[in-house]
Length: 101
Image (tube, rainbow, N blue to C red; front, side, top):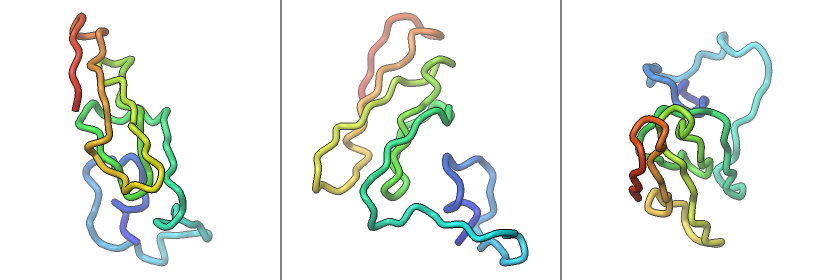
């Protein structure tokens, strides 16, 4: 397990190397890659192009701070893909303007 793979969203910068066993004080699990996709929000991820991290999909890209209102076009049984995100740029900082990723 690496620092980058253990946190969501991924703050920058993080080391690429593994987390040493001495740094972990108690047992914890990550979300298994074979479990159903999970959609999360309230992380206020930096405004950027949305992307899934494995089967974890963040839909919070700081719309209240000028980022994007983000949705995901879900197709059960299909592979999670960055192509299924739909975004609309916030009007907070830019005025009326729509875009789709």
